[in-house]
Length: 322
Length: 195
Image 1 (cartoon, rainbow over the protein chains, first blue to last red):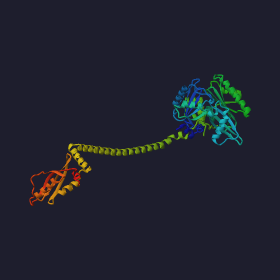
Image 2 (spheres, rainbow over the protein chains, first blue to last red):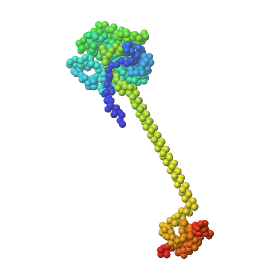
Image 3 (cartoon, chains in turn brown, green):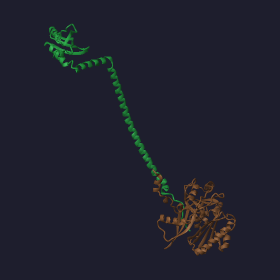
């Protein structure tokens, strides 16, 4: 008997590859090129119970959208084990926050969108195809409706290559039954932006050699851009500033929107005052992204420091109320 | 801003409820296994009963075979063999119609006077002849002698003799009882004499 054929008939591949919707696991790992951070979350009280971070040696994790990321898988596995030993409870299904460059994000506009999820997903996959450096059928796609008008539907869509996610899942296979949540790290920071704001806000997430800029107008994302920095040195700051200046100009020209509030989160923490430099260029006050103090009430001072420096993504996930 | 995205693939119903399904599946499995064990046990018991019957039959067969062998050995004993040979001979003669029991009886009856009665008659092969033994009872010695004379005169009989010399006279009557006599019956004389 051909079990594979029977399995594929009973359980079609499309159904198996369909992504779910957001849910908050109790343990989340944030895997970035320079470090692995992990936190244990209390979903009921919306608090971070434990948080830990381990540095990764240079070149151990190289985030790319189309090629394998974990150049030194054993190093990453060891860091994951150490983090989970500290935060504990890593036996269930975990959440993974991926480096932004590993995930392609786009704002898509359609005249109409089918209510059938399978059809809509096929349409999104096809539209994302042009933005992906790999065949769209190899992509794992997730999307959410940003706005729905009479003549247009706007979506925030994300795509990641299946083999890339599989690589991260494989790094977790010793300690987890598989991920319950997979998101790019910047997506976890979005809930920390003030809600109910009618103007334009910009979030800049600088993390281990890449910068992600997100423009939020009202409660909707208008722009998402990720760029790998060429130099991870002191000169990185000037690259970030010039990248930010380009984004502001693009918003003004294409979105016809003036940036009002600026939020920045730099990981690992920058030695120089990047926020001041951006403020000088834009002429606006730049605020460091922070979370609610209630999220870190249960933490020891040292862990509070880690949360502020590396773990705002965890605070963002707690803030993302369903 | 609230995010509802998730690039993780949710666990299938199969994975999600695997533990839940495991309980009824295990119960079903255990029930099935118990039923199979019960049927197997019953079949094994039936097999044992049949096996016992077969063993009993085998033992009976062996006993019958042993009995048969004993009988065969008994038949192979010299006295039984001789008896068998005699019977075979007589039967052979009867088969070949050289001797007829009814003819013999008729021949003797023909020769018996009215005052003599034939009480017993036996025959056994003696070479190519038949030795006759008969017991007679006569009214008196004359009647016995007449019968013996008739026998001697008859072409079917020869070598007529009385085995017991002393006549046994009945206490109340003058009859001579149970006088054993022998004679040879001439096999084939009946045909040659034209009777």
